[in-house]
Amino acid sequence: MQIIFIAVLVVLLAALLFSIVKVVPQANAYVVERLGAYNTTWNTGLHLKMPFIDRIANKVTLKEVVQDFAPQPVITKDNVTMQIDTVVYYQITDPKLYTYGVVGPVTAIETLTATTLRNILGELE
Image (tube, rainbow, N blue to C red):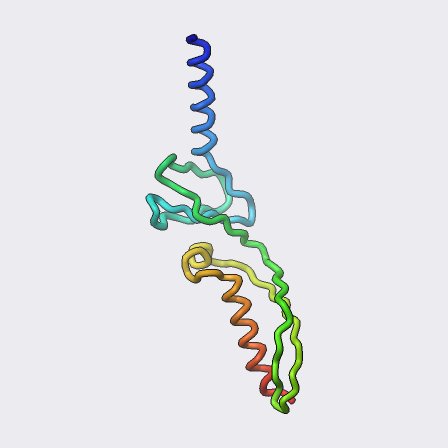
């Protein structure tokens, strides 16, 4: 009976240790919340997380991301309708702002890109 108790205790301690120690890979950042509020941003390396108090809210890649968006109809200055296919390259520089700054950041990037393209191509013939 004592052997089973010790084995269960060792397994629980190992699980707790694995939940405490976190390694952030290169070109990534983790946004950490403490009790539901923003606490810090972890960069590359080894970090210790307080169990049941800290939570990794978002794992953000800091690499350049390629996003292909669906073709958008655009009307030029001489009333010609065109289909514009858009590819956007972006890189996240502030993981906290990316996580908490806007709801649906990829949708926001797509909308901003489509609006800008419509404004530019709307002035061309």
